[in-house]
Length: 391
Image 1 (cartoon, rainbow, N blue to C red):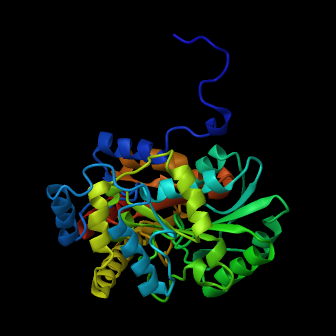
Image 2 (image 1 turned 180 degrees about the horizontal axis):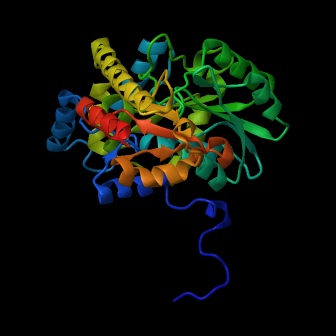
C-alpha cells in the first residue's frame, strides 16, 4: 500500500470528481426511473448505417488499427459534407482528422494549442469536459455567461469582449449550445469572428448539434466568416446526428497547421479508434437531405411534447432553438437548489434530470436550472411528463 502525504490525484484534476452523468444514470438504474439526464437516444439510428457497420466488420475493414488520421473514406465524406452543407472546402488528407468522439477532439485541441497559463474564454454554462480539458492543458478558463433573456439564454457581446486580455489564447465556442439550447445568431457569430481576428485568437468551435436546429434558427459554422477559416478548429460528431452515440466517432476540420497540431496530441490519447464504425459513418454522411429533415422534425416534435409537459408541471421552460435538451427553472416549484432537486427527483417522480450548476464555475448562477433530454421515444416523454405533473 502506498503511503504518502501527497494526494494521488494531480492538482489539475482535483476539482473534478465522478461526472454528474455517471451519478444520475446510476440513480436512474437503481430507482427504475426514466432517464432524461444523459443525452443518449433510446432507439438506434438508420438501419442502413447500422448494416454498413456490420458489413465493414464482416469484410474485415477496420478490425485492425485504422490509419492515424482516420480511414480515407470517412475523411473524404467529412470534407464532402462540409462542402455540400456550408461551402467549406477541406483537403481530406491534410485538413480532416477523425477522433474518438467530440470529447477527444476537444481535449486534443486544447492540449495541443495551449501553453500553461494561457487563458481560454468559454461560453458558460459549458459541457463539463471543457473545464477538465482546459485544466489538463494547464490553461485558465474565463467564463462568459449566457443569461436568461425573453425565454432563452443569450450572449452579452460586451461581456465577451471585456473577457479577452493579453493572456487570452483561445475562444471555446459551442453552438448549438449544450445545455441551454441557444443557437448563436449571424450577428453574434460575426462579432465573435471580428473579435478573434482583431485580437489574433484561435477558436475551437463545438458544432456537434449542427443538424439539430429548430423553427427559424440556422446553424452557421464560424469557419465560414471572414478571416476565420485559418484560425478555427471545427469539431463535429456522428453520435448526435445519427443516434449512434456509443460508436464514438468525431472529427476535426481545420487548416493544415492546426490539424497537424491537434493530431500530435490525439495520437497519444487513443491513437486510433472505432475502425469499422468509421466506414459506416462515411456512408451516413452521404444520406440525402430528406434524412436530416425527418430527423430534425422528429426531434422538434419531441421537444414540444416534453416542453409542454414540463410547463404543465409548473416549471419555467426555456424553449431550445437547438440540441436535444430543455433547460428549466425550478423556482416556480418553490425549489432553488438544482442538485438537491435532481437527487430527490427519482424518488419523488421516477424521472432523472441533470442540475445545470455542474456546467457553471459560479454554481450559484446555475443553481435554479435543470436540464432534461428529449432524445427519447415519444411514449417515454409523455410518461415522464405525466409523472412530473403528478409530483
